[in-house]
Structure formats: C-alpha cells, structure tokens
Image 1: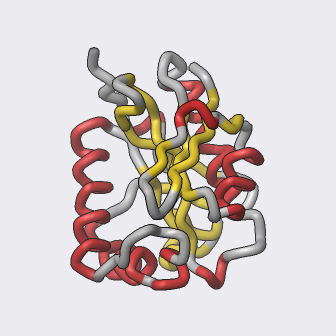
Image 2: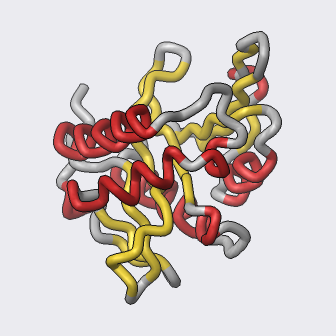
Length: 178
C-alpha cells in the first residue's frame, strides 16, 4: 500500500506560535548543529557526530521527496529564517507493522516553552487527518522523561508491551492508535 501524500496537505502549517514547513537544503547547517549538539542527545544511547547528524538531515529530505510528508523544520511564526527545531511524523515499521514515528527535537534555547508539545500536537492532528489508518508512535529512552511528557501531552498513551530492552538502555513506546 502506498502512503504517498500531496505535500501541500502538510506544509506549510501554522500553529499559535510556530511555523512548520518542509525542510530545505538551506536548513542543513542548522539541522546538523542541532542534531550534533550534545545537549539534544543527552538521552541518546550513542554519541552523535556531525556526519551522523548530516545523514539524519539527508534522510529527512529523502522522506519528503519519496512520501510527500515528514519531519518539519520549525521556526517561530514571523521568524522563518531561524530554525528552533524539527518535528513531525514519518513512516516507520513497528513490530512488523507500518506506523508514523512522532519526532521532536528542539534547540536548547527553545526548551521549556511548550514548543515541542505544540509541534507534536500539530503533527498528530495532521497524521489523523491525512493518514488515519496508521498509528502514531513515539519512541524514546526510559530515562528521557521530557520526551515522555511531550508524547503524553500530544495525546499518546504509554505502551510497555512494545518496549525493547537493549541491555544498557530501554526503548519505551507511546502510541495513538489508528
């Protein structure tokens, strides 16, 4: 089954305070800086290099080209030139089933203001509107309480039955059923 979307259904999108838009090649520097920042990776099980952050950003662009939706570049409304984060949904296989991975990663300067929740709520709403047959899933580590709080605030429910014990760390799951 194809999940291909018309990108105009997904971008740009405005919330009360945020502009959520398709990432562009010109966003690469900001994306690599944000994704390679040790503060934004405090709960990731492995170190993230600039090369890995660049691969992550290239994957964001590929998903948009292939599927017509994906993770948005996030700016404050009225300040479209300054990226404060990335959020949205993309296709992911969870326990052998297609799902939408809910993602949110913000610059530390934007933390504590509710932007991650605002973006995540918009992403879940768009997913329910345009891909209602797919569950929305958020994955994080057991010690990342901030990410767990955001998943819950976006309307997802904790799913311990999906958790994966990786030995040194546990991946925990939250879902919004299709």
